[in-house]
Amino acid sequence: MSERTIFKEEIKTVLKKPKMYRVILLNDDYTTMDFVVEVLVHVFHKSAAEATKIMLDVHEKGKGIVGIYTYDIAATKIAQVEDLATKREFPLKAIMEEE
Ligand code: TYC
Image 1 (cartoon, helix red, strand yellow):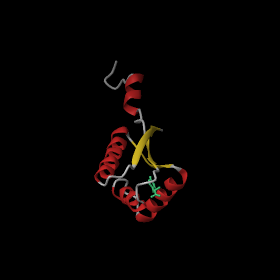
Image 2 (cartoon, protein in one colour):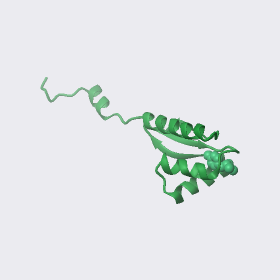
Image 3 (cartoon, helix red, strand yellow):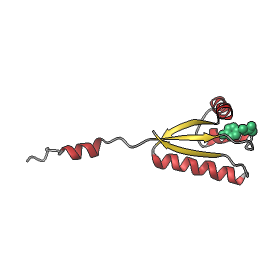
Image 4 (cartoon, helix red, strand yellow):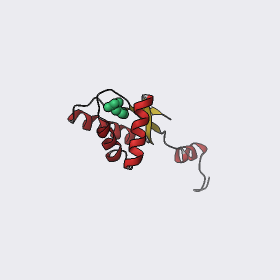
């Protein structure tokens, strides 16, 4: 077997795409609209216009996707949302779902 021979399993390991996770923002009755926009701008790097659109959509529909990330990035962003919300005493929450 030459050095260039690669087993099928090795190819699979090398080429396997990471699982991706949707980060979903949940509506509530207490968090202010301004704070949600602030979070979308600072944590999810949305423009003010895009953040406002997403916030209003979540407000109307109850939840909405704010981004799709690898597990660690999604978990970090969810923790940042929780951290900022806790500091301001808002119940704002984000969750993740596997794509
Ligand atoms: N429903 C909130 C209000 O009326 C605003 C809001 C929007 C809260 C989106 C959370 O994810 C959220 N103040």
